[in-house]
Structure formats: C-alpha cells, structure tokens
Length: 170
Image (cartoon, rainbow, N blue to C red; front, side, top):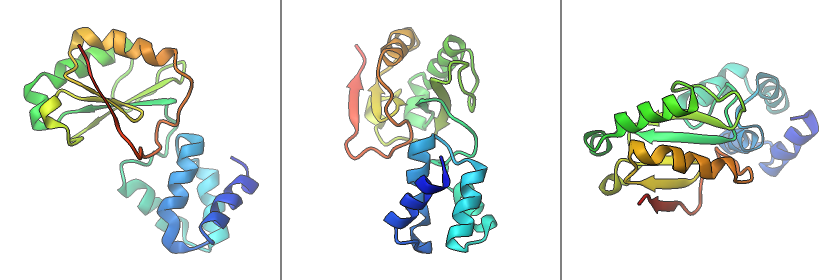
C-alpha cells in the first residue's frame, strides 16, 4: 500500500494515537497483513514510536506481520470442539491444503490458524473461513467446504464481521 493510501486511512482517524487499532485494522483489511514499510510510515506520520505500534500489532492475534492468504481459515480447538473431533478436522485441513498452522497455500488463497474458542460451542467442531462459520464439520466435509471457497470472489479475510454467517454442514 502506498503512502498516500495510508495517509487516507490516517486522515479518516484524524491522525489520533488513540485510533491506532482502527488504523491497523484498515491497513490489514487492505493488505491482509501489516507490512513493515507501512508500519514505519504510520510511525512517522503519527510521531509514534515504531516499537509501540509493534507492541499493539503483536498483542492482538487478529493482526499478522506476515502475509496471509486471501481466505483465513480458523479451526476452533476449544474444549467443546476438541471433544467433538476438531483435531481430526485440523489434520484433514492440513493434509488437504498441504500447509501447517501459520502457513499460507502456494496459490496464496488460504492461511490456516487455530483459535481457542469462537463462541459457538453447541455447534462444534467449528471452522471459520473469512467470516463464515461452518458448524458440525467433520474430516469428510473438509474438501467440499474448501472447494466452495476456491470459486468465490475475494472478500477480506481479516475484516471483522458485522454479521456472522453460520453454516451447519450436512
């Protein structure tokens, strides 16, 4: 993202230090991660120490300092999902995508993460792709679920959903 585009984001937040999380969210919505050169520009424009920006960016797990795929896949490993087979679902995803947790597919379409809870315990195991929740997913449903996303137009993988979409896999 160029300096002018970053300046537009900063202007949206009136160059306020207190809006740094919103600035970082908007940057990540555009880039799918927080590029170092962009963080340096934000630091300069806000006269905010770069170390402070990095502390914020690394504190919240929603932010990524490394490139991520267009679609972020989060597998819930909370207790309810775990006892219903989330680890097997995760293993199947890793095998099918050919990546490990924290990695991105070669086509840059998917990144894989785990989370401790997504708050939909009754529907576990849960896999969240972008902002769509896939409940009661099994290892046998992984392939067909992922194939749907290979055909979809890109939506921001990191944007915080205002309305979560929940799908129960049959």
